[in-house]
Length: 345
Ligand code: ADP
Ligand code: MG
Image 1 (cartoon, protein in one colour):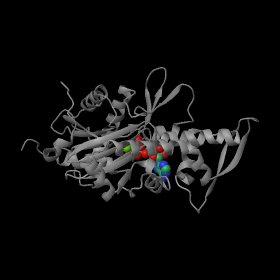
Image 2 (cartoon, rainbow, N blue to C red):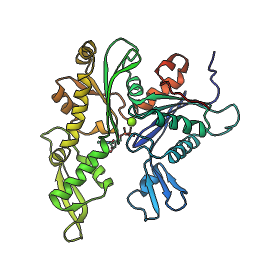
Image 3 (cartoon, rainbow, N blue to C red):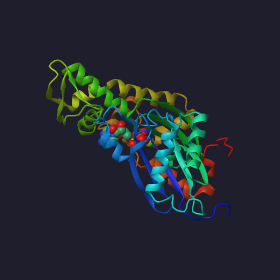
Image 4 (cartoon, rainbow, N blue to C red):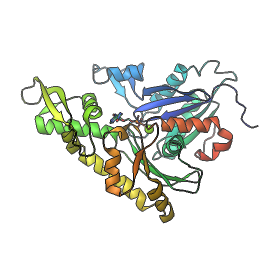
C-alpha cells in the first residue's frame, strides 16, 4: 500500500466566505469564516475566523479586515497560509508536526484559479506542515459530496453559489466536462441590497446588515408569502440613524441583476455541454450547492429560466468539504479526481 493510514488526514474547503475542515474518519470538525483581522502597521494577526468576523465592520482604522480568498483567487498568500495554519492548529492537526503525524491534505479550490494560484495554495499547505497536498476543483468535490454519480458516464450539473464566486460545472466520468466560473455570488447579493436601500430610501447600511437582510427575507422568485424586515441605518440626507421596513419582494428586485448573471452562467455552461450529456442533465436535473443557493426561490428561479428540474443538493453548504473528505479518505482510488499541479519542493 502506497498510503498508510497514519495520523489524521485532512480535507479543507477553502471557500471565499467560509472554510471547512474535514478530518478523515471523523467528518467535518470546523466551519469558520475565511476572514483575518490584521494590524495595518505591523502585519500582526489579531483574529481569525469567527473572532475576525465579529470585528468586521466595527474596527478602527489601524486594523484591517482581510478576506484572502474574496474573489476566488488567492489575493493574499501569507494571510491564506496563516488561515490554513490556524485551522489545522484548531483541529489539533499540528501536534507532533515534525514527526510521523503530519497530515496529508486535500484542498478544494475554486475552478477559476490560475496555475500560479494553485501552486500558492499547495505551498501554503506544505508551509502549514502537510506531508502531501492535493488539490481538487470545488465543483468536482461538491458533486462528489452531493453523492452524484461522478464516476459514471452520465452528465451531472452542479451550481455552487458561494460568497465570492458562482461555479457551474458538468461532471462525468470523474472529470469536469464543461464549466463556468463567475465572480458574482452571495457577496454581490449583499452589495445589491445595500445599493437598493441607498437608492430607494437614502439609507446607508453596513455590508453585514445587508447580508442579514438577505438571509432573513431575501428571495429569488416571487412568492405569495411576502415577508418584511426592519432595517436600521443612517439617513444619507439628515445624517441621523433611521429605521425603514423593506419586503422580500423588494429584495427580489434588488437582486435582479445578480440573479440574471447566475442564470446566464448556467445557460452558457449548458450551451457548451456536449448534447448527450445535456440530455442526461434534462433527465437528472440540476443540483444547487453553496450558501448562496439557500436564498428562497433559487431552485425555482433557475428551473423556470432553463426549463430543467432544479433541486438543492444534500447538505448544500457542506458538500465541497464532504467531497474533499471522501477523497482524502480514499486517496488511492480517488487520486484521479485531483488536479495535476506541477510543483517542485
Ligand atoms: P464559499 O464557498 O464561497 O465560502 P459559502 O458556500 O459558504 O461560500 O456561502 C457563503 C454565502 O452564502 C454568503 O454570501 C452568505 O451570505 C450566503 N448565505 C448563507 N446562508 C444563506 C441563506 N440562508 N440565504 C441566502 N444566502 C445565504
Ligand atoms: Mg464553497
